[in-house]
Amino acid sequence: MPKQKPARTTTDGGIQAAARARDFLAPVFSQYPLEVASAQGVWLTNSLGERVLDLYGGHAVAGLGYAHPAWTAALARQAEACQFQSNAVAMRVRARAARRLVRFSRLPFASVFLVNSGAEANENALKVALRMTGRPHVAAIEGGFHGRTAAAGAVTWGAQAKWYGFPRTPFEVSFIPRGDTAAIRAEVTKRTAAVIVEPVQGLAGAVALGAPFLAALRARCDEVGSLLIFDEVQCGVGRTGQPFAANLYGVRPDMLTTAKALGNGFPCAVLMLSPLVAASVKPQSLGTTFGGGPMACAAIEAVIAAIRNERLLERVR
Image (spheres, helix red, strand yellow):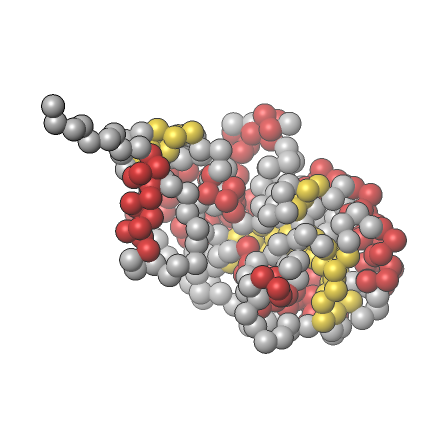
C-alpha cells in the first residue's frame, strides 16, 4: 500500500511562506507561522483556505476589524475622487478630518499635525517641545516604547542596549521608574523640555500607569514649565472605552500623539496640539509629504464615524 503524504497544516504552510518572504525582504522581522490571504471581520483566511480568529489586529491596528463596509466604501470613494495631493493645496477631506479629530478627542486641543506613523508623530512632538522651550533634556518612563527613529528611540526604554543604532541621542534623556512619584521631582527640572509618557504602556505588556502618577507628572511639568506629551499611539482611539486615555484619567497633556487604530490599517498618525503649543508652531517649522493625504484623511473620518455610529466606546466600556 503506497504511503500517504502527511496532511499540510497551518504551521507547515506558514513556515514555507516565511521562507519565501525571506528571499527578498530584509530579515528584520520574526513572523508567525501564518500566511494571510484575506480577512473579514475578526477572521483571517490563510493561504491554505483555513480560517483563523485574529486577536492581534496587526499590532493593534485593525480596530474596526477587516473589510469594514463603511471604511472600505470611504476609501473607494476617495480613491475615485482624488487619491493624493500634498499639503501645498487645500482639501476639504483634510480639513474635515482635522476638525473631527479635535472634536472626537473631547480635549482642549487647538489644532493637529497629520503625519504617517507613531514614530513620526513622536519625533515632531519632541522637536516642537525642544524648540518651544529651548531646553536640552527630555524625561521618559521606564518600560515605555515610542519608536525606532532617532528622537523616538532615544526616549524608548532599553533601546540603547537592544537596537538603538545611532552614535548619540539628539538630546539629554533620563528615565523615571514607573509609578515612582517621588522620582519625578529629581528627573523633571527646569532643564527639561518635555516628559513623554504612554498612559498605558503597550510593548511593556499593557501596563496602566494610573491617574495619580500621570497627575503628578502634570503637576511637576506645570511647576517647572515643561511640556507633557501623551503617546497614545497604541492605547488611543477608543481602546480604553474613552476617546483617549487622557479622558479616562482626567489628565490633560500639552501634546498627544496617536496612530495605529486611527486609520484601521491605512497608514496615518497625528500630533494634537494645545492652544499654547499650537501658537508656537510657525510656517515651515514642520513638514511631511504624505501626512494628511486625502486617503489617510478619508480613513480617519471613517474610523471616527464608525466609533460614533456603532457606539463602540460604550461597547468597549
